[in-house]
Length: 128
Image 1 (cartoon, rainbow, N blue to C red):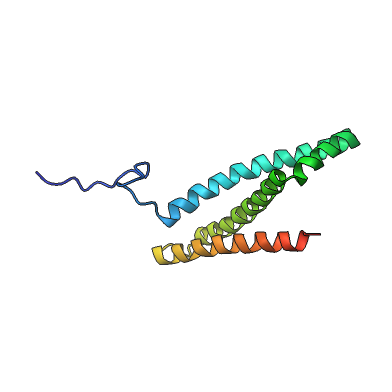
Image 2: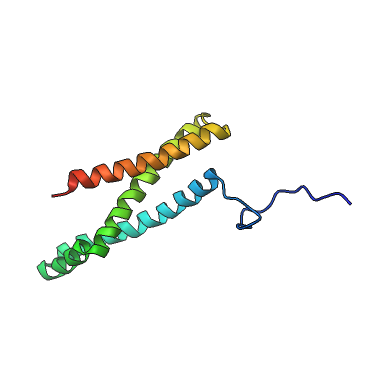
């Protein structure tokens, strides 16, 4: 009998499948898209609280100023810059550049590095 040479499903993570850079970045891109939606809902909450009066706004500010709120905003900022950077990477792919594995890996690390750098710079500049 010959051995089965069919590729393994990406859902067989563990000893059968080693995640690749491109698959991890793709999943992260989708997750950051969801996080951006959640963050946009938080922005709507904050604006609505401002519209409903000072008491509502004080509660929204208390949450966003808390440690949990600051963590939420920091991760939302990172998701924004990651999603933007990966979107630019996809524009290059749409133009036909960077398809070989070595270029895809380099651009993937560039996306991760650039998103972290922009997030830290944004928070350093915006800090009081």
